[in-house]
Amino acid sequence: MNEYDSELVAGLLEKEDYQRTEQAEEAQLILLNTCSVREHAEDKVHARLNNLKVMKKRNADVKIGVLGCMAQNLKEDLLKSKPFVDIILGPDSYRKLPDLLAQPVESIENIVDTKLSRMEVYDDLFPARREGINAWISIMRGCDKFCTFCIVPFTRGRERSRSIESILEEVQRVRDDGFKEVTLLGQNVNSFLHDGHRFPELLQEVAKIEGIERIRYTSPHPQDFDDDLIAIHVQNPKVCNHIHFPLQAGSDSVLARMNRTYTKQHFVDLAHRMREQIPGLSISTDMIVGFPGETEADFQETIAVMNQVKFDTAFTFKYSPRPGTKAADFEDSVPEDMKQKRLEQMIRLQKEHTLYRNRALIGNTLEVLVEKDSKKSEKQHQGRTRSNKIVIFDKAGEQPGDFVNVEIVDAQGITLFGRIVA
Ligand code: SF4
Image 1 (cartoon, rainbow, N blue to C red):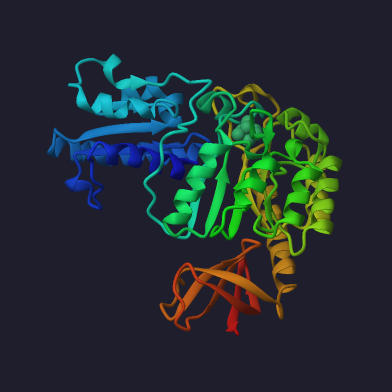
Image 2 (cartoon, rainbow, N blue to C red):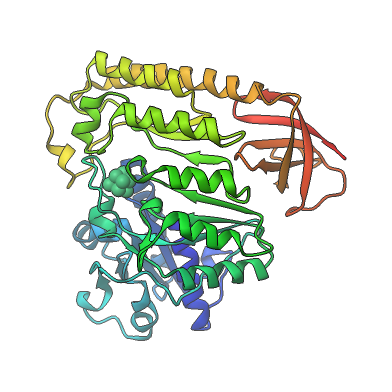
């Protein structure tokens, strides 16, 4: 979402005749688009701002801005601890940027705007995109779920969706710019609702656009996932056979304290129905260990769900309290060494499952979209299957953006290795 928002802001500034530079030293304006979802992300921004302070000392004319969730969440702290920051704008205030830049900065009120909106979806603004394979397209903003560990509802405000017409216009634009793949984005992407039109309908309409070959979306919430959405995957192969399906925890009591609004059985049943019905489906997930009050028995329940679903990949995190969230006030915190032990056990198990899923693909021929050179050798390409698996294979004259059929010959970690077949 932040990548998309950065492209949106770049688009807004390009309309005002700003030009992008690759060298920070050449810039007259430097904007950091920030994330508050984990402490680590915030620490990185603080470190980056400390570097920019040095730059500002050398060149007092450079304007420095903080955008996004940290601007929303930590504006008081930023104003106090980083007085050299000129502009602080929350995620619903980007439209103000050109006007602010045109004004002399006279007072703090001139440069801070973090008002959240119930309407803003940037329907009429189009991002300035750089990379030519996958285009991110925001379809809804905000979140009404209020998971107790998450700061997003406070930094990004209430759920609101774009119109289908404006989304389709943007998809057509990116198709005309040569993109083959789109990823529809939202904090709760499958709770999309505009004028009575739901998410499965939107997917159906996007799939009608010729030239767009792959459609992905992230992140859905299990509570809003239903059989209509599974059916869209089955009926329309353009809607990729990969679903990011965030479990977070596999114990009902932890799920209830997290306010995730589903039970583990609901989750497992849905995952089984998805796998039964969608050919070659891969499922990725997000997991949190060490949520306040998580007992060893709770953790073992989570492990049991992982063993049942056998996710293809998982993003695993140790819980860390985010100030301002409900869970930050919960007691019974899990000791740090216990969190670490559980995290390591979870990672070991997930590695086994990833290998199990990926080895099952050896001998299959899969359609791969060529993305870029492989990190290890310029003689090899890196591409992606519809099921979102990374594949490395020798080059044979194809270009990024081409589709090739690749026979999978090996699997190591999260990566598949293959050779092009006719
Ligand atoms: S669904 Fe929960 S985790 Fe996801 S953005 Fe909303 S509050 Fe945060």
